[in-house]
Length: 639
Image (cartoon, rainbow, N blue to C red; front, side):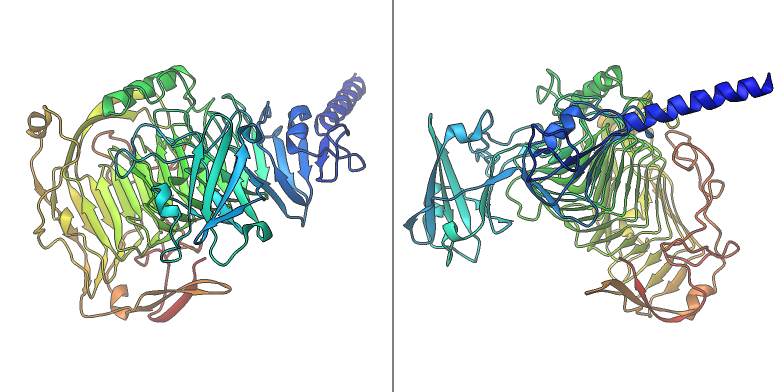
């Protein structure tokens, strides 16, 4: 009987194996292929979309060398982490997917300006030169200016949309080339400046598609996207209260892995992990109360750990987006954002709003943002509402304003092992945050009170436990290095306790000796003064500080061909102070939620690894992100 059961088991295993092989089909796509082919290496498809149309859970789509000008709308996703539909670039090959088309037949107009006429039929159902950017928290400057969704590119880099037609007809000023468009019932006319170039002899492209890879419906789960160069999307503004379309987007789904891609030149957003669309999009939702309604509808539409989020975004380079590199309203929850390089986000300052950052998340429940390199962005990381259990760890940031903004969260939010080198490191309008083992070289700006009532949740869940106002404080700074340019004086006092412990202060730092700036306030409703009466101002507490205010560590970031290096001199004095290992037990729970600092998903934390993953001295860890055993001059490759 035992042999009989073994025989049955082996037969069933063969059946399952056969099914796995059938479900694990590989389809090939090549620019030389045909969509009447069958997707084999001998008869590859010509378009990625055709492969997407036939791929089933567990299948792989391998795309071969070339430029693909298409908008991919995956009709289905996988079934699980083990049965994804994976879109990948063939090994060692270069694949570009573009939302643009090449335009010829330019005619010289005047000065540096050329003109082209394009039939509206060329664009199909979507003409980005007819459509304008709009949405909640989008603030054009001046207020009545309209911005078209299209762009014009010369040899891969975008021109700047002109404010008026008259401006584009003048000679180029300060090297900034402009374009302008007009659309009537039959024709789109584009004027663009090409100084010292004949555009008919260059690569001139214009946007024709609003996305590059984006499902047209929610719950397209478990997709992998690997190794592509994706660019040129006419994306719209992506507010937290409406559908969030990106050049690449998950559209309210679960379990995507987006890795090893270059994602660039999106009118608004590079990657979206967020909100689905409904009849309430951008309608009376631009307020705290309006977003509470959005959250309640999202909960009813599946916002929970089993259904939404848990994406992995890693090893990508994301750049040249005018709103955000990665954005996500609630759909980002439980995700990991790691080892990405994000830069040149909202640097042209063409328009304004409240959603511009390298990474901008609402509802970042248990999100881990780790080991990223973020520079030249409006804000590096902006966690807005419900960053409960979020961790920001091991990131290198510079030339942002600020590096990190925490807005109306109640914690616990843990920020550790980061190298923060911008002129402003933190903008704080939240409670329940712990900053441990970081380098700070900039200012810490503090909002003392915000009257908005914002949610907090059950542990590791999207379930809303309640709403609470936002008093400043309940902040812990432990084992950090504050170097020249750092200024924490605005945390000299707060409405909730603030504790500094085991930190080092060098020359040019401003401690909590006394803040001379006026208190700042966030949104203040008619009940704000009454709400504030329950709090009293508390002086901050400084314990076991190392004051080395005459010493300059000469901290400097150096960019070389082979990488980015951090140079610094470590003073022997910094080893003299006894410091505690940062653990869940060592950190006070967040005041509003009464939850401990722990791992995403649960489990005690112990900050026993440094920026490089090296083990710390458990009995007396060195301050800052890098564990060191001797004084002297150091040079580390940090990216």
